[in-house]
Length: 202
Image 1 (cartoon, rainbow, N blue to C red):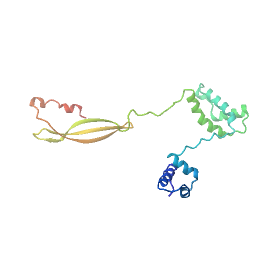
Image 2 (cartoon, rainbow, N blue to C red; image 1 turned 120 degrees about the horizontal axis):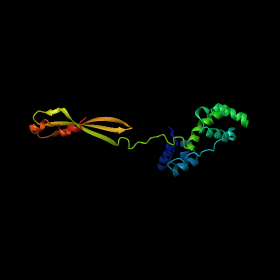
Image 3 (cartoon, rainbow, N blue to C red; image 1 turned 90 degrees about the horizontal axis):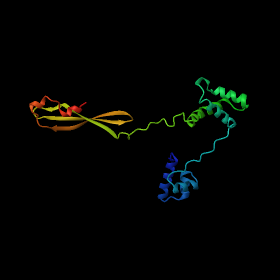
Image 4 (spheres, helix red, strand yellow; image 1 turned 120 degrees about the vertical axis):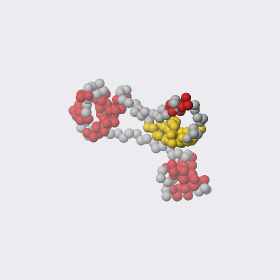
């Protein structure tokens, strides 16, 4: 089964080369050329694809005019801003753009309008709100008495720890049995008072 990605292909070529397979045998096995095998032996990661220059379209000559209309809309009231149909009509009437189609103008305006707002400092640069801590790295622990763990005359309390793990802004509750704590019986005068441990109970 051939590798699914180019990274896996490079890893397979390097593994077989370490096993003693020749360059020509690697080419036959994986159906690649000499340059691919050489690149796999030189680097673990494939080189990123070269970005091709944007293809020229019939709209290129009219893009500055569209940008000027969109920049004028920044200070105009909402009802007076250009729609795509109005921009297309102005291109036909004022600039003679008879070879430009409406879908071309609509696609360009959909991409360019938010970019112009950002360039003018009126759009959000980044709408992502980062967390203040790593996922699951913060926890809150509260202890409470478990009445079912009392043993008459021994003063034994079984404590449950209620752990709140914070992840993505939502709490995840986990109840963990912490074990038994043996404490001495308190004097009668103090038994009516509140247990210090219960002051932070849930």
